[in-house]
Structures are given as structure tokens and as C-alpha cells.
Image (cartoon, rainbow, N blue to C red):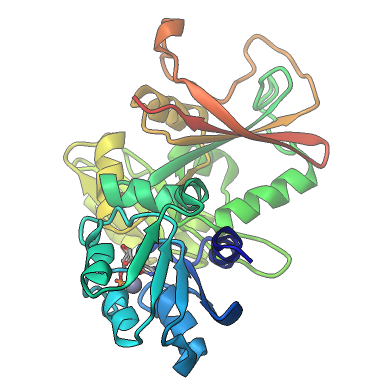
Length: 360
Ligand code: AOF
Ligand code: ZN
């Protein structure tokens, strides 16, 4: 096997941990000695051992003189765990193959430098594009201190999210709805507007055949209208954070707090300051499940990194039937939010389009 094959194996190990390492990246590692794999590992959870630590534990004595493949530069800092670069030096590996540099300002090249300074051969850039793509969300978070925002919409082929009478249930099929739950599972937080809570009373939990992780439920609620009887306020299934303004009622705040809801008052109630606060609270990935108004505000602020669109092969028409994005709208095509489609798949009868928002 060649370098590229071992690195692909390390990337596969990392990929399997999607959704469970936040706010840390997904990282995989393989240790090879005399053409045999002697250790493999992935970083499973923030606060626990890094990929190299797990792979080297498996390799034991065989690590000496071996080559280690890592999908991200070995760290050089004391975070929740000690530096991996030091462990690699201590275990006397001969060569380190790295897919890409760690953009974390605490690392960013220092891990590689430390290894090279101690006489270890370090090769950087094997499967680099795949490694960057794998951790796109972590890279965004560590560089901007804001969550990576994915906006999800579901509409008919003629672009409608509900009928003229407001019926919006079951636009997409069962498979697409299951797919949404898979995406909820891998996100730290899910966000909706108070309008969605008042009209649908959603649980916003992850319901997959084998369980699943519930994202933090975030409600944008300027006037603190969230009913104490709503599922997100009282079912205790997951954390609920409500963003509101300084003017909201203190009694209502107290009542919601008694139910375990976290009420966050912002002096500057805006999408950018909400994202800043979420970044501070270590939310790395945010899944925006809309409401027309909320989607409109995110588009207006250009605060979206990725869009996932489900399109159902149905037509309902109606001049006044809603579409996914409300608000004032962008007046001119040359100011449109430009997207690049990166994936198109059919999910049951529906089509899932994943697009990245072009930078700049
Ligand atoms: C690695 N291997 O498997 C991971 C790395 O708080 P800590 O100690 O877990 O450090 C977290 C930072 O370490 C994280 O932000 C990222 O820069 C790096 N993650 N590094 O060498 C790994 N998960
Ligand atoms: Zn490390």
C-alpha cells in the first residue's frame, strides 16, 4: 500500500465520527511498520484522547521506527489533552505523514515544526483536499469563532413550502424526513423562529431508528412569546436556548427558566450577534430549519455557509403560497447569494441538493 492508501484509511476512520467530536475536528490515524498496519485510531470525543494517542496505544512497542499517518497536523499545545507531537517524539517514530495543517492558532504549523526539529521526517499534503473538506465546519469555526451555518429548506418543484391555506405537513416524503433527522444528529444546534414554534409546536429532536443525538434547540423570540406549554420549553428532551431582547418580560423569563430554558438577552438583537454568542458557547455547527422570516434574515445578513434543499416532485401553485425565504429579498440579481452545488442525490422520491455559499 502507498501513502495515499493509508491516508484514505485514516480519513475513513475520521469520517465515521461525524457529529460526535465537536467542538474538536474529526481526526483519524494509522501506524505502519514494515508494510503492516500496527495501530489505528480516531478521536472520538472532545476531552478524550486524540487520534494519534489511540493509534499509538494500539501499536505499543511497535511504534518505534514506524510511520504514522494523521489526517490533521499533530497538536503542539496543552488543551484538554497533552501535545501529540511530544508523544510521537517520545515513542520514537521515524516518519509522520500529515494530510493538512491544523488551522487552530494554537497549533498552525508548530506541531510539524516540533517534529522536524527533533529529526523526524514529516511529509505534509497527502489527500489534503479531502482532509480540508472533511473538517470544513471545524476550520470555519476555529478561524471565525462562529458556527458553520447550514440552512435547510424543503419545497415543491414549484418552490412552495406550504399551500395557500397554510398546509405545510408532508411536502417531502418519509425518506427525506429521515434524512433530516440524520442531519440533526450531526449538528450541535438547530435554530427556528418563534413563528415556527407557535404554528407547529415542533419537538426539534433527533428521531432515528437507533436513537440519535439531540441538538441544542435555539429559538429566536424577540418578544419572548414562547409558550411554557410548548414541547421545546417543557419536554426536557434537549437543551433549549431562547434569544430575546432586553425589553422582554422578566416574569416570562423566570417562568421559562423554571422549566430549564436558557433565556439569552441581547442588547444588539441581530443574526451576527446571535452567531457570535453561539460561537462563544462552543456551538460549531448550526442547522437552520427556518421559517420564512428567519431564513430571510440569515440571507440578508449573508450569514449562511451551506444550503440543503429538498425538492419534492409536487406542484401546488398559488400566488400567495409561501416560498422558503421571506424578508425583503435581494433587489438585484448581481447581489444574489451565489452558491456552488456540491452534491445532488435522490432521497426516496425527493431530490436533495447541497450547495456551498461562495466566499467573498
Ligand atoms: C490532533 N489529533 O485527534 C485532534 C486534534 O482540547 P484538546 O487537547 O482536545 O485539543 C483540541 C485541539 O486539538 C483542536 O482544536 C484541534 O486544533 C486539535 N485536534 N489534534 O493532533 C486529534 N482532535
Ligand atoms: Zn493532539
